[in-house]
Length: 222
Image 1 (cartoon, rainbow, N blue to C red):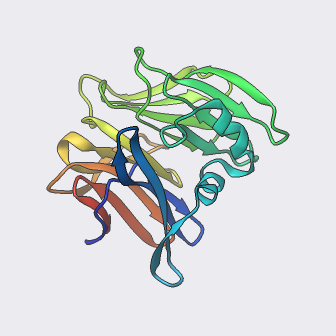
Image 2: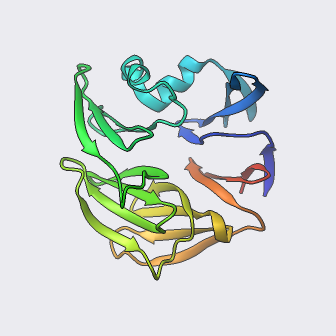
């Protein structure tokens, strides 16, 4: 593995030719000052970019509406759906779906036992969400927000699951308490080990042929 950034990162996002992430630039009395970096695969450089660039990657063209719905846009969970709609889940678990024309639809709540998800991802017209304190991965119907399937629980392959990243039919779930990443086949629902580290793992993404993991000590290219 190769460390490529050792500052505090709030979120990792893949893009067509690289990755982008918000990070802690400084701390002042009012709180964190957040800036944004982008790694380009083409020239292998990491540069600061504007918040507008980040907003476009995270929210798409409807980012002005998303920003009005939630003040803390870094923690706001989002998915740009295949049809161009924007799926949002705020810090209280409230779901909003923004149509292409900017119309806001309130879609109920995304919760499990009053817990908000630690991460969300989209797969075949369903929303998958990880819940850290209950050690479960749950599939929700995107139209009703009702839970359809649950993996984990008392006897669980998850231990404080954080980020969930879906590539094809495989979900990669970061088990922060066991310093590991597991793979979940979303067709057979089988679970197997993928990576193990010597410290906590918070996020994992793929972009092109590259894999990245956000650990306690920083961001790594695997």
